[in-house]
Length: 159
View 1 (tube, one colour):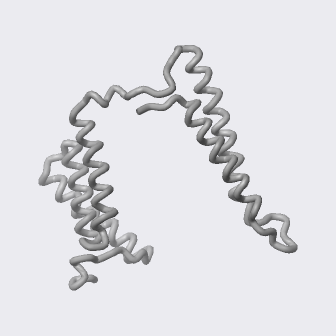
View 2 (cartoon, rainbow, N blue to C red; view 1 turned 120 degrees about the vertical axis):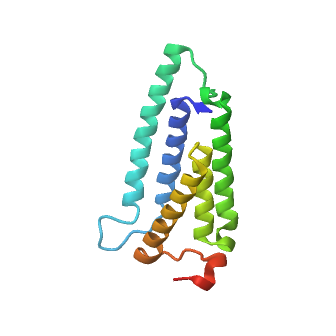
View 3 (cartoon, rainbow, N blue to C red; view 1 turned 120 degrees about the horizontal axis):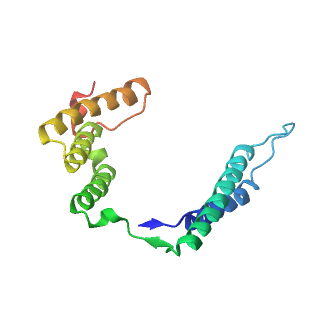
C-alpha cells in the first residue's frame, strides 16, 4: 500500500517530537557544553524538517491530483510479485525463529536461495550463490568483525 507523503510527514513529525521530548530527560555532563542529548536532538530536528517537507509535498500533490491518502500499488495484481513478497516475509520469520537452532550458515543458505528462487533465478544457480554468499557473510561477521553468530546444528564442525 502506498501512503501519501503527507501521512509519512505527520508520522516523522510525531517521531521527531517524541524524540525531542525524550532527550530532555538526559542528564547533563558537568563542565561540558555538549551533552548526551546533542546527537539525538539534532537527529530529531532533522527528522522534523524532513517530516515537514514531506507533509507540504503530500498536501500539494493531493490537492493537485485529488488523490487518496492511501492506494494499492499496481504490482499487487501480479502473482509472481505477491509470491515473492510472501517468500520475503516467510524467510524473515524463518530466520528469527530458526537461526539459533539451525545456525546462521544453514538458515542463511535457505534464506538467500528461497529469495533468489522467488525472484526467478534458476534453482541450481541460486543454491550456489546462496552458499557462497552465506560463507562470505559469515566469514566477514564471525572472523573479521567478531560477531558471535549462532552455529546451531553445525556446532561440532565450528571453525
